[in-house]
Image 1 (cartoon, rainbow, N blue to C red):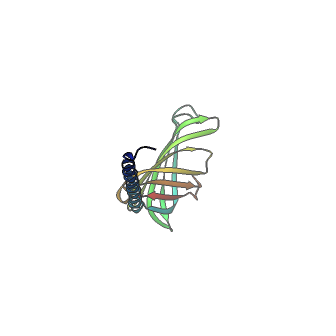
Image 2 (spheres, rainbow, N blue to C red; image 1 turned 90 degrees about the vertical axis):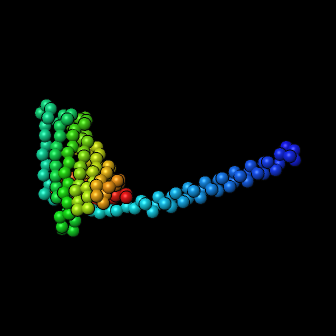
Length: 163
């Protein structure tokens, strides 16, 4: 294996490597601990009432690229009005009866606003949207919003915000 003069250098190198590896593990562990303290999840569910909806047919009659819809609703939690949501959806793909739209929504609540977006097909009864930002207490928010019973009197949403 090498002469007796190289052994102390190999041992020093091995010891230094182990110390470096241990410091790296502790640094990663402490970074994870700090991150977990900063990231918390806030969850709430809202009903959407008094939905207003307006389709806008911009191209040839019937579904076509660029057609839009605008909508708004009152956000209700436990029977109490807590905010207001509004948005638009624009048709970005038509394949037979399947229509895909790009949806963008802003939800205004007492503590601030949340913005979200996603693609949605006309065939979906649920929708998951990415939270793209926020203001006030939701500044820098990210997470997801799931919608159920879309465009019905029972429409509701579950908001999961990562702070």
